[in-house]
Image 1 (cartoon, rainbow, N blue to C red):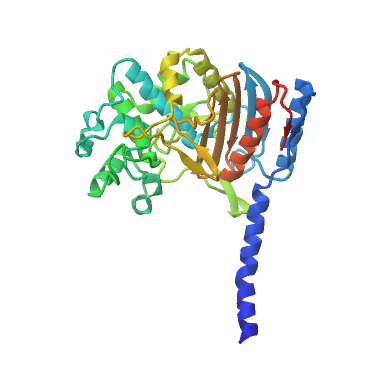
Image 2: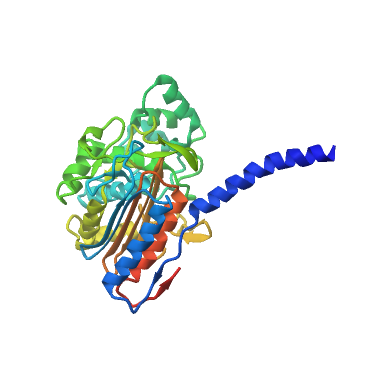
Length: 397
């Protein structure tokens, strides 16, 4: 009997051990060493060699840019824009996933600055279908304190879209919220709970207040004035035709091995605001420059996005992610201010956007075939290196 138990245990543990080993190998990254004595060109060469190593080991597929004060210092395009092998170029636009939320937040701040809404307004004022949520305000949506469940994680809603062979819409989402008498899950402002639903509703408020679609508003008020020619709101129901060089998400069929298979937009991608803004790296460098220059919004309005959010009782919101304390602002993590970060993950896309407001350095890491944790780790290593490029810091990681 015992030999049989041993065989059964081995049959169970061996595949598990193999999977754990592959997972650990997938996130393992080489060290970066940047000497403070090196010149700036030498430091950039060190970073390029590091990117060569992660490219050769198959641990990165996407775009990486580092710029300082509008000057691009490093620009790399690695791998395929889709599962067919089409190469990534400087014109390739990536789905920003949750990095999109900062743009939605700034759209709300712009409308508030123009006196067209107040962050303290209840959302029922603009979306009468949701009047039953009473004291739920725009601010609660911005800060993820609404108590509304996350539609993107709802398997029932996803199954319904599959059965009906269509993509989710804002009316679907509003109806879904009304179906559950237990929603909201907690009293608005009582605590923080991340939910993509919040930013879809914010995008709908932008549309109803402006009298334009969310996509048109963002194009006319933000992207076109800044010359962001490769940036647009695009979903399975909007504007995909406007992106001639769109990166498509993909993955390995069996997680770590096998042929490349599509892992792109799903039936939950009929809405935007929480995600589904596409951009290339150079446009995100231009966006950083516009925020620093205050060319679209006054600085006091922009600073609102970097302010740590607080519960209604005044308690600051803090989260612990992989042992690191995170303090959210509006679409940004602001615990290291004047350095701010934004992460995104959806389907095959995983992104990292880091900005030093202090010295004008910006880092863009966009991937359409990456593990989110690994992309975040790549971003964090490069962000530390970017911060050390000219300030005399010696980096050993």
